[in-house]
Structure formats: C-alpha cells, structure tokens
Length: 248
Image (cartoon, helix red, strand yellow):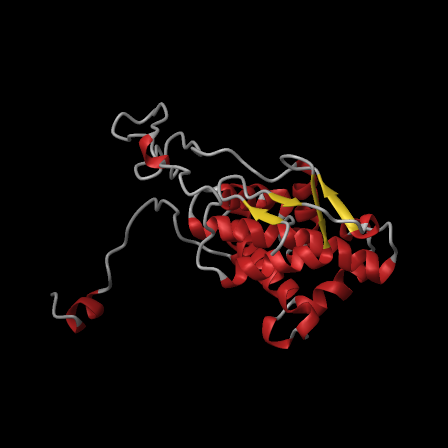
C-alpha cells in the first residue's frame, strides 16, 4: 500500500502524493485525513484480513490500560479495565471517532434498527456511542474494527455519491436510497465482488448496533425479556416436581 501508513494507536490514515482531488473525501478526525474510494477499500481489506494491526513504529510501547487505575467509588474495585468499578464505571481510554463520523454512524444504525411503536431507534439508545467506545479500545480486535468501520463510512459516502449525486453523502439520501445501498451489502455471502468489503463493514456495524441496542433497558423491553427483575416472593416448586426429582 504505497503512500498509506497505518498507525496502531490513533488508527490514522494519511494519504500522500494523490493528485485526483475530485474523488477525495476529507474526514474531520485527528489530522487532515483524505482518502479516496480505492484506498478506503484497501484499508477495509487489510482490516478484514489481518489478525491484528502492527504499529509502524517498532519501539512504540504497548498501552496497558490495566495499569492506570481511576478513582473508584467501590472500595473493593481497583478501577482498572481488569477490575472495573461497576458502581461508577469509567472508560480508561479516549474516544477516537469524530463528530462527523458519529453523525454518519447514527444514520446507519437507525437504518439497521429504526424506531417503531415498540421501541426507540438504535441511535436514541446510544448505539453510536457504544460503537465509538468499542472501536477506541486499544486491543487488536477493536483496532481492526476501527479501521474497518472508519474506512466503511468513507466507502458508504463514495457509493452514495456515485449512485445518486456527486455532492450527496449517505446521510443526505432518502430512506429508499439508503435502503437500496444497504440491500446490496446486508448479507456477505450474497454480496457481489464489488460490494464484498462494504458487506463486511455493514455486517460488523449491524453486529455492534444489535449488541448495543438489545443490552439496554429499551432493547430488553423490545424483546419482552423478563429476567433481572426482583420477585416480591418466591414460590417453591410444586410437590409433584419435587417428588419427580427425588427431593421430597
């Protein structure tokens, strides 16, 4: 990948020496990052195929999030990633997605899980924030997801511009236009060769969006999940059940 550097800790992508300004998108993230559709696809391919991203700086120290405790309200918790304070949880790493990326991600999350009469949409219960926390974590799998998702958002905007108008981004499209793109990338085995990487991106965002949504109170209500509820009283099993089990 000539001219492209992948930085492990910040997941920055710097495009050097490109002359085709027409097909470049500037991402408002750390540094002035520009990426065209071809390079977005290359980066997504690396993220999908590489077990872990390697730092371009051989001497770069590994981040040890377990060694930096945060003040804990629970005196028995160390306040680290390995022993978090669940009473007052704190994420011990900085978020990396930009406001622009989060805005685009929110639109895609709501295409995946829109609001209906049963529950709010994915973005309304914080799915983009959950994904931001996930891809910002300094672990190999999370860093790989960060590259895939950030590159995928660029791909999504380029696909939108190519299909529906040069100045349009995915979040500018109508619901029908957004679904037309998502229908082509919603199932990896059925995706065409040109949409394969887009399908991998969509598959990962759908997984993270679903995880975020159905682990909230609203999501559990949508599933009609009735666990984790205190009982006013507990009724023992009926005598016939106890006899069947040999416990009476």
